[in-house]
Length: 83
Image 1 (cartoon, helix red, strand yellow):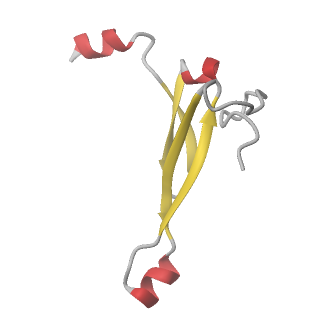
Image 2 (cartoon, one colour):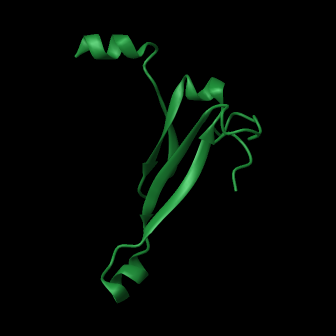
C-alpha cells in the first residue's frame, strides 16, 4: 500500500491520486517460479512521487539495488535541444 512519497528524503503523505505521479514498475521476476513453470513471473509494484518531487526526479528500478530516484533535466526542452 502506498503511504508516502517514494523519494526517501521526502515525508509527503500519499493522499490523492491527482497529486503527484504514480509509477507502476516491474521489479523483476521470481526465479524459483520461473524455473519450475518456465514462465517469467512479473512482479509489478506501485510507487508514488509527490508533485514537488515529480518535478525534479523520476523513479527507476535497478536489479540488485531496487527502486532509485533519478534527477530530471532542469528543463525538458533543454534536453531535447541538446540532442
